[in-house]
Amino acid sequence: MKIENQKLTVKEAFKNYYYIVPPYQRDYVWQNKNVEQLLTDIHDEFQKGDQSEYFIGSTVANRVGTDTATYEVIDGQQRLTTLFLALCAFKGFFKEQTDFSQLIQQLISSAEINEKGTIVKNPRLILQYEDSFETVQRILDGDGTVDNSAGASSRIRNAFDIIQKYLSANFSTDDAVKEFYGYFTNKVSFIQIETPSINDALKIFETINDRGIGLNPMDLLKNLIFRQLPKNEFNKVNAEWKVIRDALDKNGMKPLRFLRYFLMANYAIEDPKGTETLYEDQLYPWISENDKKCNYSTEPMRFVKTIQKNANAYVRFSRGEDNVGKNMYLENIRYLGGGSFSLHLIPLLAGKDLYQDLFDHLARQLEVLIFYYTVTRTSTKDFESKFSKWAKRIRRTANPSYNDAKAALNEVITTDFAPEIARMQADFEVQFVNLGLRSLQSYKVKYILAKLAAYVDAERIGQKGQVSLSPYLQKKIEIEHILPQTPEDDLLKTFPDKDSYNIAKNRLGNLTLLEKPINVVAGRQFFSAKAKLYANSNFYITRSLTAKDDVGLDTTISRVNQKLLSFTDWNAEAIDKRQHMLFNLAKEIWKIEPLP
Image 1 (tube, one colour):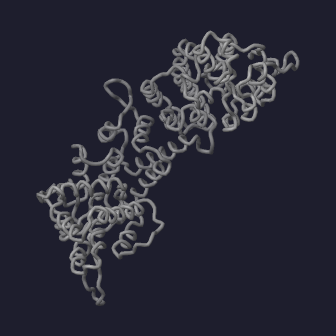
Image 2 (cartoon, rainbow, N blue to C red):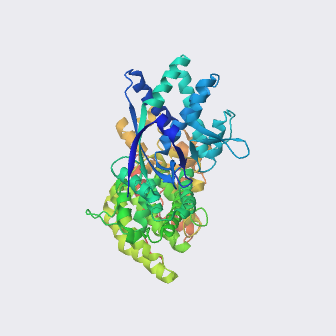
Image 3 (spheres, rainbow, N blue to C red):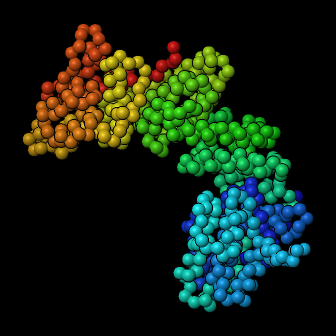
């Protein structure tokens, strides 16, 4: 492989060469802050006044055919595009000064007369992805109308606008802008690394990144896959890759987190520490060293399709959806973990091909595990490792036989999940009986109260199985402090001191769900006054605080009544008793069990 490189100023680059950013390349992703930073850095160097050169990095490109003046850009297109847009902005700034603007035009495009006698302009930079070509063309034509472009095209238009505003805001005279333009084109430089073939360029791109300059593992993975392909398949694979990036980007998903979870869910990860986890800086090295597991060199398109399938599942599961729609257990995990929690996606991706009822059961068991980890305050690092290890065994459930898949899932539940719950049981009890608003975020406490209330309501009417928590988690449903948050002096005097009152009022035993209109009326009243209001609640766990329904001797109501306590007085002792009552309910609700 023959590698050539040369140092080029902006003027030399755009005067002597044409650059093409092919459609398989990453879009223009620079935000306003990136553009402003480049301009500021160049301006700061310019203001030193010593006319020293300012080096902005390197590009990797390969020659197009036998044309020694045209290059495909493999790395560095963000900077090249921004430099090109700056030249366009300079030209627009001097549009009234014909001689000056015509000289700048030579760096933006060349012109020739074709066989029909028509002047044809050849832009020095051509972007071939999405509709970016049209956006750049409008900028070249001086079309300042506002368009409805999105994505890369929108970012290109924004970058051009930022450069125009920067020139107007930082230079008071035309001569000052001319001087800056002279520095910009003659003193700003970069190294252009040139290769004779696309594969050579891709390899150099990878090497540069490996030395600390370049893109993230997701971009490198795309590069690695492209190196396995003939060039005529680039566009096809790039279209599939775009589906992956769009699915993640449109849903605000972090690509590198997805890539971590994808690998841990789908492949056996071995590491010296035995954690079976990967971190972001380990992703690309692991993939490049495990071709036998991934088969990216022999079946690159199949590997891309596998990533794509996992990305789509990752997005669905993150939103609380499975293959057919909303999934109650995935939604519950979102309620418990919050919007940013995602570790459950590792075992779920491993089990994404399970039969629907088996997948539901897996999700239900994961909800239990995450609840125990939450209450016992287990570090995410610890159970991430366990999820990764269990994913290896969950993958065995992807079996065409329903009975075999069910047996494999039950083996994971009994061999891995159940012992994990048993290990945490003692600590879980200690933590739960002291649980309250001081130990967990309010949304997690509301999830617990909702789960308890839903279970009691279902038991009361003899309904078997899980029920949706949505009715219990609406905004109009609030967490009621039975001992009020801001007590009257007479109520505060019933406790030894204010600290003991504050501890009692925040315990889980002092909390229940209550409809907002009732809660507003209940306010800061004594328990005896609130009792009549609680009787109007739709939630039986709240109504039963003061009185339980009396319906027969062996009915669903009488049986659930045996699990509940009612109170005539409300104090620290009553709160403690209710906290233990809730713990006993919790053991019935959150439990690991194989499918019958």
